[in-house]
Image 1 (cartoon, rainbow, N blue to C red):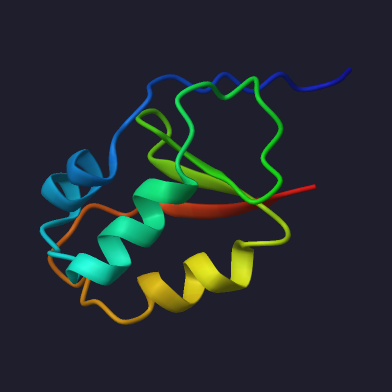
Image 2 (tube, rainbow, N blue to C red):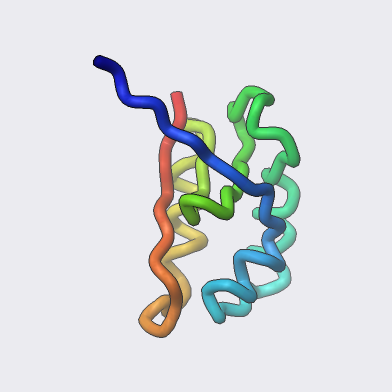
Length: 88
């Protein structure tokens, strides 16, 4: 039997910052905003989508390392856990 996953929500970069309590630099915020797409049904090549439930960022494999590099700069010790998923 296969397992079906349901993903809900379309968070903005600002929503992500508010939820995690981090403040991205202007450069990092603009980079993430430029990569963000509204529809999770679009191809993720060069793009990312932030889901509300579960709280995850899905991004194309071509930008995964770039997104990870941005996220690693910030302290999430007081934030809700989130996931980063590389989509192929």
